[in-house]
Amino acid sequence: MSGKVAQVPELIDLCREFDAALMLDDAHAVGVIGPDGRGSAAYHDLDAAAHITTGTFSKTFSAIGGFAVGDHDVIEYIRHDGSPHIFSASMPPSVVATVLKCLDILQEEPERLERLREISNYMRNGFRELGFDVWESETPIIPVVIGDMEMCFRFRKGRRSCAARTWRRTPTRSWTSSWTPSGAWDASTTSWRAMRRDLGAGEIKVVLLAS
Ligand SMILES: Cc1ncc(COP(=O)(O)O)c(C=O)c1O
Image (cartoon, rainbow, N blue to C red; front, side, top):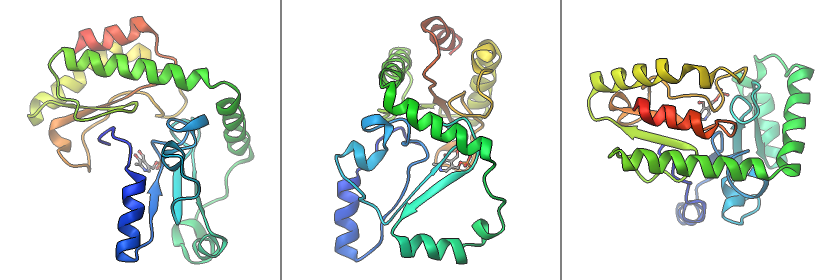
């Protein structure tokens, strides 16, 4: 949620030092960073770096559900002992087809990721120029630190109503808007912006102007 890319090589070193397993939650990384959007390990040129990598289909893939990838034994264990998995319905075929098609598109149309990077940098720089603290964000997740809970809600509400029309296009909440401060650190005083590839330059300006 900080918008920073996880330092996977350092995490691997720590895991080695403490004999720990590494689990990467790539919900915000798959389809976003690394070659063909292959996520945070690929971003660092690493292959199968984590014991378990998880991700959601509700963001980049505009669907629902998710995945867990790991060694066969680990996945078998989750399949047979992980109650959230055991008590979940299986994925609808339409969702599987959507995700498979998205994976094709990610490989075949790299310009989409390039554009996402460009407009994320544009938006981030725009917030910085306006004087906002956006931490060390370097991805399409842009935290905007407001510093006061009431101001944070007002900020979020104002931008929402002004730019609502830009955020209606995806069927799920994927890459859409800022969202209500909730469970994360500094949450009550920070508003988050998640960029979406198909936002136009005009729409981004509207968001910045509304800020
Ligand atoms: C870091 C992270 N992991 C996992 C999830 C789970 O996503 P979902 O419940 O939509 O599959 C989210 C959702 O916002 C997230 O931000």
